[in-house]
Amino acid sequence: MRKDDCIFCRIANGEIPSRTLFEDDQFRVILDLGPAARGHALILPKEHYDDLFGIPEDTAADAMRLAKRMAAKIAGALSADGFNLVQNNGEAAGQTVRHFHMHLIPRYRGDGQTIGWTPGEPSAEELDETLKLLQ
Ligand code: 5GP
Ligand code: ZN
Image (cartoon, rainbow, N blue to C red; front, side, top):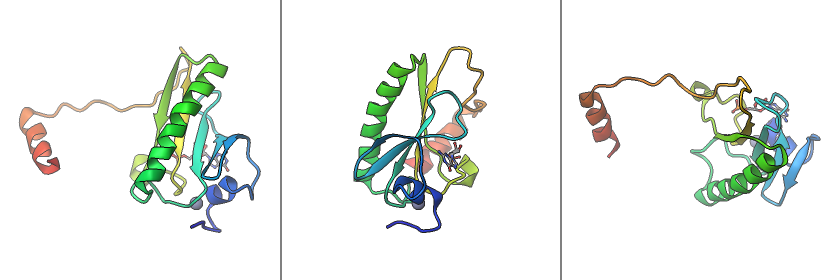
């Protein structure tokens, strides 16, 4: 399903022009307009899914296959020193556009960007409690 009021549905399906690196029947890969680094691209499925929880497993697997191919292409073409694959789900996790997408972010030594977190220091009991909830 596609949503008329979703900007990424409209971009993915070519209704709004974008700088497209790759397109097939399932996905469009575009340059991010607010890049973390040169070559930052987004994988957009042409169908609308809000996030990882809504995307079918097969589509998620296809997106990851494509991410691997695009990462190699982008990193090679721009001589990147590293690469981040980022995928945000929900406002609390920094998702600003509610249409599943994967960030492909080539990284360069000294580019000054930080994509990360402050490591916590849970006790062994806390870790064991968490593990129990997740098993
Ligand atoms: P999120 O924060 O949801 O994980 O990522 C949304 C990303 O989409 C941001 O990196 C933002 O720069 C990018 N973005 C938002 N609107 C547009 C747009 O209209 N065109 C393009 N190419 N990127 C967009
Ligand atoms: Zn959409």
